[in-house]
Each structure stands twice: as C-alpha cells, then as structure tokens.
Length: 218
Image 1 (spheres, helix red, strand yellow):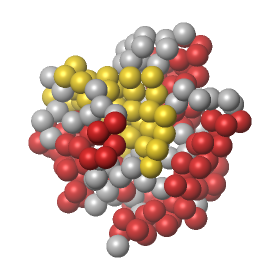
Image 2 (spheres, rainbow, N blue to C red):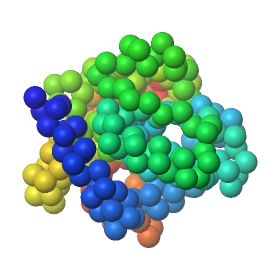
Image 3 (spheres, one colour):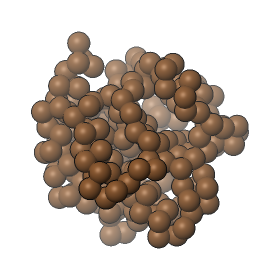
Image 4 (cartoon, rainbow, N blue to C red):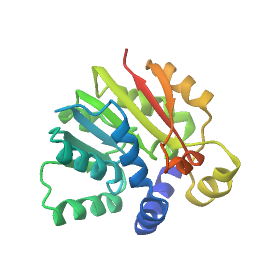
C-alpha cells in the first residue's frame, strides 16, 4: 500500500518536485558542483541512475560528458512513469538518443538486469528513502548485483534530523537515515570502503537535507 501511495504522490507532484527541489533549491547545480570535484567520473564508463525520476542526475552527467568529451554511457530507471515522461521530454527537446531510460522497480530488478548490468558507477539520488526500511537491504543487494567487480555506488539520501522530520517525512513521505544506519546497511549488503561526502560551497546548504555516501565492491 505504501509503495502505491508514494508512486501516486510523485505522479501528482512531478512538476512541483522539479520546481521546488531542482530549480528553487538548486539541487541540479549542487550535483554538478559535486561531480566536477570527484574522481568517480572517468572516460567511457557505464553509469546507471537508479531512480532517475525526471532526470536530474542524467542531465548533469550528460552535460559533463559532453563538455569533457568523456563519452559516458548513461542509463536510468524509475518506477513512476510520470517522472520518466518528464525526463523523456527533456531528451526529446534536446535531441538526445544515446541515453537509455525505462520503467523498473529497485525491489524487482530481474527483468532489468537481464538487459543491463556491469555498471562502473551506480548513482542513486533521493530514491531509496521511498523504499520501506525493512526492504532497504534487499534494494541495496539488487543494485550491487548490477555493478562490475570494481564498481562504485554513490547514494544521496535524506538525513534523519528535525528539519527533515517536519518537511521531507511529513510532506514528502521520505524515510530518514543516520550515518550509522547507512553504514550498517551498506556493510550488510557486502559493500566496502563506505565514506561520507558533502556538497561543496556554495551548495553546502544542501547538506542539511541529505547524506552523500560512496561505497565500493572491494
């Protein structure tokens, strides 16, 4: 029932989500600043945006790939068709045909994984907080199966704090996590080298909202 209510919520609020988080709060710009200072983006790598929504991560990585001539292979999936339609609309208006996106559920990736696997990097931005907590470990294990043996997992997820209890949990139905929660879950899913990162200045205000966690296969 909760999964259906989340999908319904984001179907109704797809445009509001984009305006509020991506434009007003500058989340896309924060992502761009972060990716520009990390070492996870390398020439020719295969990247999955797990829970791509309307395409915030895909847009940023596509532009970085074009600007730096890194020839990135970009894929994405999301459960909510209304969000995917917004991403497809952006792709259509910008004549982008080399990005692959489709509808899929992180808890049921069997059909997706038959076609797409061996990713060098999986980015999961503001999606896993909408998975019931008791199924979070299963979701992480499903994503880990899609990575190469040298793969990297990068997660952006809602922090457990007073602000988010009032806003993200109450208004947007997001689950919240502490650093300890996430480290325990990632190590339980057999990830290694779990490290926490921050949005850089001038987008460091976004750190009030979320954790950035990097984990590796080995």
